[in-house]
Image (cartoon, rainbow, N blue to C red; front, side, top):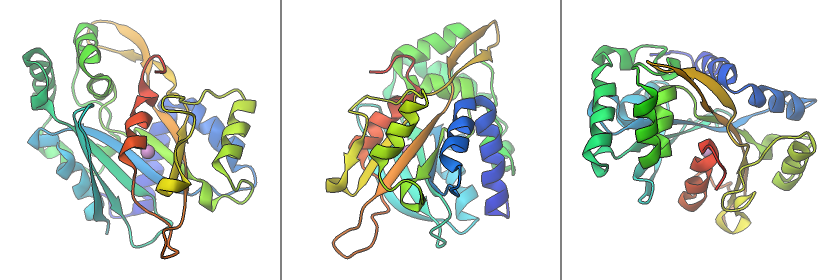
Length: 267
Ligand code: NI
């Protein structure tokens, strides 16, 4: 495991922009004259014990992160938790896990076959969170997963890496509002996820979020290569609670739509 938070996030970022070149371009566009602070970084996994949410979160607990919230996504068959560091300029961490047992036997078999290929000791390795897919699948297996769950298919192809980084609009100097960030992105030709509206949430739930649609990248599967969605970039604006402190949690209804940023076709 890492003993330095900044090194971990730097490695995660490099791994992320390798497969998400648009995020690097957005970073340069928005970062001009502004230091970009990350609101959160998100990870995905399966709820199979060897690789479950707890195994991923152990990397962050060891760096001083604490569990702060739990979320259920019944329709997508996911659970998630978020973690925060005592240093508020460090990104929050959002980790979700797919409830494998709620899928068909076919889908479960493919996922178990994947996870069987993971060495139990691999999950504690320093680079595990940006090690990619520790398994191989065929394009047929990918398609079977895709029919049942976009999330499962994404995991099969991409494995362990940041699913998205998220710019904190609150920390930007040249933009005060998420709407202005979105306009700058559209003016520059980037495609936003419009599922559930361009902005998910808002001041009423103390969190407004938007995201780009994932880049499309060629992936080598066991039998052939295929161009599929990789990762996306998110933007978050937080609002104060009645006590004057910024809300630090997540809004399940909004996150539900953000998940769809890795869909092949926008909903
Ligand atoms: Ni997010």
